[in-house]
Length: 356
Ligand SMILES: [Zn+2]
Image (cartoon, rainbow, N blue to C red; front, side):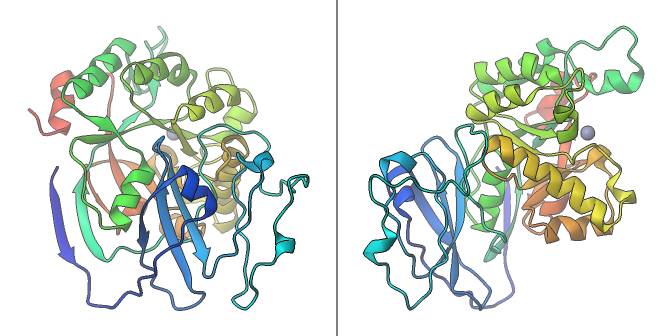
C-alpha cells in the first residue's frame, strides 16, 4: 500500500468525543469519532463498525436522551431523538414493555445487515492523504450474445475470466472493502490497510446475480453494485430483480445509485439532478433499509453542476469511468476506477496491482 500524507492548513478543530448509543453499546464496536469543524449545534459525528463489517455513522447531538428499547424493537433502526440541552430524560420517555413503538423510520422491506441513519454531512479529515486502492469496474459478467456489437462485447467479462481474476486476488491475499470503508479511512485520516480492492459493477445486469455473485461468494468477496433503479422497478429483461438485490444486500454486498434511468447527467438541469439522484437513493433505501451515499455517473458523464449537486445532496462520493487508482478525500466526487474489459488479460489485471 502506497501512502502519501501532508498536513492540512493549520487550524484547531474542535474534537468532541461521541457517546455510544444503547444500540452501539450492545451491537457495535466503536472505532473513534470524527472531529467536527462547524460551530453550531454541538453535534458530533460517530463512526462505528459492526462485527459483520457494516459501517455506521451517526450525528449525535449532545447531550443524548437515551431511549430504552424493548425487545419488540431490538431489530428496528434506532430513531435519533432531538434532545434539548435543558430537558433531562424523564420516566415518561421510556416505553414500557407493552407499548408498541411507532415505526416511523422503519423501511418497508428489510434486508440485513443494514446501515442506520447516516449523518447529512461527512466530517472533514484533519490530515489530507492520498491512498492507492484500485476500484475495479465491471458491467456484464457473461459470454456476449452472438449478435453483440463491439461495445457490448467490450463491456463483458467471461465468467471463467472473472473467476480467474477473483482467484488471483484471493491467492495473493487481497480482500474487498467498500466505498464506505474508503471514505471512513480518508475522513478519519486512518492508516490504509494492505492489499484491499473495491469491486464495482454498473447497470444492475442479471448476470451480476447469476454469474458474478456466486463467484464473489466463493472467494468471500463483496461487491458494490450501481443500480439504475427504474430499470429494476419496471422489471426490464436482463436486469436483476429487487428480490435478488435484497438477497445480495443481506449477504453484505453494497447497492448504490446509478440514477433512476441512466441519463447523461452533463445535460441535466438542477431539478432533474435531484429527481435522478435523490429519487434513486430513496428507492434503494426502501429496499435496503438505509439511504446509500455513493453514485456512479452514467457513462461517466457529468458537469460542474453535477459536482455541485452531488455535494448539495449530501452524497459521500462518486465514481467515474476514467482510469486511476489514487484517491483522496478532496476528489471524492471524482474517484477514478479501473475498467475490466473483455480483452483484459490476467497480465493486464496484475499490472493494476503493481505486481507485474
Ligand atoms: Zn451505466
